[in-house]
Amino acid sequence: MTRIQVESGSPYEKLYGFSRGLRRGRRVEIAGTAPIPEPGEAVAESAYDQMLRCGEIAIKALGQLGSSADEVVRTRMFITDADDADAIGRAHGELFGAVRPVATMVVVAALLDPAWKVEIEVEALTSDDLG
Image 1 (tube, rainbow, N blue to C red):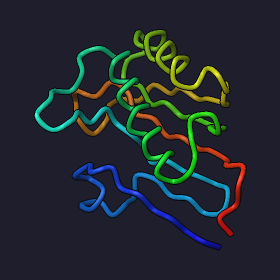
Image 2 (image 1 turned 135 degrees about the vertical axis):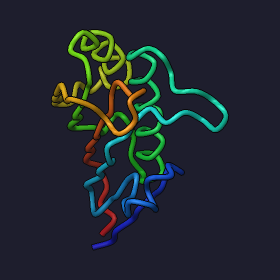
Image 3 (image 1 turned 90 degrees about the vertical axis):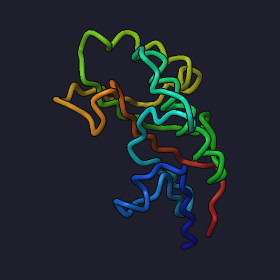
């Protein structure tokens, strides 16, 4: 079965030995995706904007693997403050509300960078098989 991997440019990918996304057959997996800003920019302040940035990075990786937000079947959100759940949930709805994937939101003690308020994982099932 064909296996395709993509990178997003995060410094952690090579350092820690993982891919942003992986596709095998119809299954597409996007690794834990934090709100890494564009070069020269700062991490967004609000949890809402951070979730949108996480989604932007994840959806780009889906596209590189021949998938899209329309094929997402599961998301997992790791958040550092339960008070941010509504803002993160609203952003999730903007990103994936058209397909309403199964979703999990878990409050964690911390993420790798103290400025991060959210990190997501995404799974998709494409309509075509790579073989």
